[in-house]
Image 1 (tube, rainbow, N blue to C red):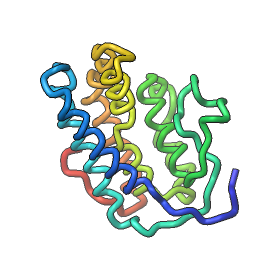
Image 2 (tube, helix red, strand yellow):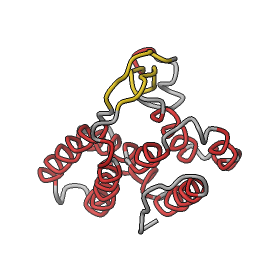
Image 3 (cartoon, one colour):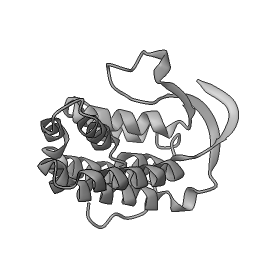
Length: 185
């Protein structure tokens, strides 16, 4: 649902703050959680890549829509899970969620992207796909003592597969848009 008003894209600044937050809290727990010690650099690198990807969008504004803070079955219909944001948020978070719940194999991703090729700014979609909120949400749960670090296996074990999934999406988008290249994908 459109809000019929322009809103500023704040992701980049929020992600810079998130990076500072993660680095600070990680400095307090170095050596305490083996899985975090082994994986944190990879996800901070993804976060930095997402921030870099948005460099050209620092003054970007678009029509605001009612979007989801989290795109999962647990939170999907919760009214407290809604916020004003740009339309690319839900689409990219949907693409992330179907990868992590495994349902992406039942969906023709290329057709989905092609269907909406004139609707979304795909640089923003790719940036959001790079942003590893799925890992950092679990990181928070571990350092707050809500879960053991074993919960991180749900994400870490899917790194290579997610990179292939990202490459597939980026290659598809690249067939009709000139987007920034990501060397490591």
